[in-house]
Image (cartoon, rainbow, N blue to C red):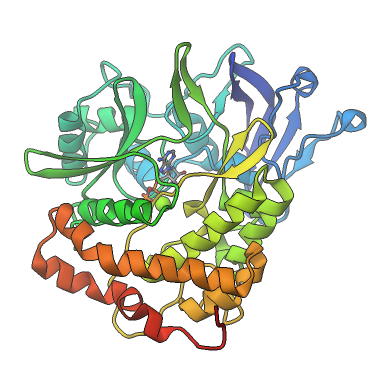
Length: 426
Ligand SMILES: Nc1ncnc2c1ncn2[C@@H]1O[C@H](COP(=O)(O)OP(=O)(O)O)[C@@H](O)[C@H]1O
Ligand SMILES: [Mg+2]
């Protein structure tokens, strides 16, 4: 019964402090984890829950609680958020010469660039990265975008622990998501760079750029974006919302995915809805009114651009001193589809996951919106998306042929007002 223990640190304004002790046990039939907050941490006025749902901060009386994961969970969601997904795991797998790393190894091997404010280490002294691939660190810490872009391309075809892989293990293996990416910075401010995958069918970096700019034109809360083309390689860049450059260095903001805020299991994601995220905002949010409208508008936007990858890890929350806020938007990418029936991953309204404006408007009460307001918000989004999506694609350097190929994604925006049912009058 291999059990691995680690200290969990939380980066607070003064630096990382030990928050508690985690054990991860991997058994052939089931894996589980336990966690206990440290007493000193619980006495801090600025303490933050490591996971607000599965590891709520105990009240004064309940100090010695040892949490154990629920049936079916190998780790707590809030801690799992700090570990990489497909891309980081792929890099680690390669570095281990095609040996599957354990969940505990993956977590402890994730480095400082991981999302949010958690960190790990074997002793309470300071966080420390444990890399099972040994001499893994690449020389130097910062790599140019050119080096990273070349490394991403090479690493997908070469099978050895070479300098390219080492660079990405340093800069890219800690972040979540499946697409090739790496941590980078502009003038000291952390950013994320997303690259082309060798088997991409579309120029996704440009499509993501065009769509995220469009979202910003719609008034959604979108981080600063940038785009580089270096030696013919596209790089989409997004400023990190969980890091802020201050005179004292880079500050980290605690982050929780939608999965964490719902206490949901990855394999159950199809059972959840935007209304569930809205309920989490009401329960844990520090500005639910504003965030609920933003969430509703994001749902409508996903419908209008056919972003059907709106799973719970693609929704995020940030800790502000008084509670949780919806994070800025990320990872919104249209996907061309055949046929007219569209669904999102998360439930939209009374017609379940059906990705239609009428379904969204009919479900708007969950976001605190009266029908007329819901309709007005949706129509404003329809108008902006219809008027601007082509120009956004052109601005991102996409061709007429690519625009034609993606027109199917924007069909609802192009027809928007005609598709709306008449029952809900303004
Ligand atoms: N601007 C950002 N600031 C901080 N964290 C981010 C930002 N964008 C994405 N993330 C985090 O990185 C993860 C991967 O990014 P994402 O764009 O979703 O990549 P992928 O397309 O591979 O899924 C997200 O799930 C989120 O946790
Ligand atoms: Mg993602």
